[in-house]
Amino acid sequence: MTVNQIIGDSQNKIAANFGKCFFDWMMAQSSTTYDKVVSNFYHGLRLHKLSLFVNLQGIVLEIVPGTDANLPYYPKDIHRIGIGTKLQTYSYLQKQVEKLGLNIDLRIGNSEWLDAEDNSIDTVVSNLVLCSVPNIDYTLQAVLRVLKPGGRFLFIEYVAAPQGTLLRKFQSKISPIWKVMGNGFHPDRETLIALENAGFAGIHYERFDAQLPIINSHIIGVATK
Image (cartoon, rainbow, N blue to C red; front, side):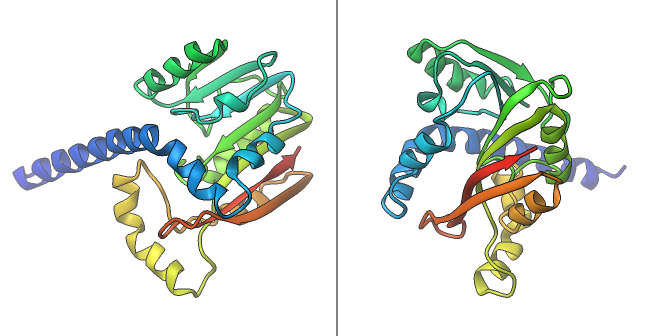
């Protein structure tokens, strides 16, 4: 390996680590702002979450909970599991958990192989996660594996702009940069197509426009095993 290769590898690692730390901090600072922006254009993301999480019960697993803007919407009588890839993100989460008096089983794990037994989870929750997992197809298969028969996958996710549009072309152009600076975020990922092809028995969703630059298209819904 040459000196230039070593320097290049080091620079890439520094950039990746900086991007991840910056993204975690940004989400911790802006999750409330995100909710407010969306609420102005689709009757409120808060109302969507209240509707989506209204019947939660049993064992609920959330993928990569991060700063966990969903905590206020969860009932206190469920058994909740949070699976993420980094210990440092839980420092934000733990403060909210203590404030709300909740009991959560936090686990370090991979979204492509969730740390849970087969057919053991009543509900899996994904909140703006599928756009940044390394392999969305593997992640969705992991969701299907851990869900009980008839179990539900609740999701609020970003989706790419339609093929052929100027916005979609721009998303594809900036995707390599955003993957580094945005903690693996793929602005051109076909999240809805992946959901439809995963093998769920049924999928019900709604689209909403978050009015955010570059990443305004989102979906919210339920997929049943």
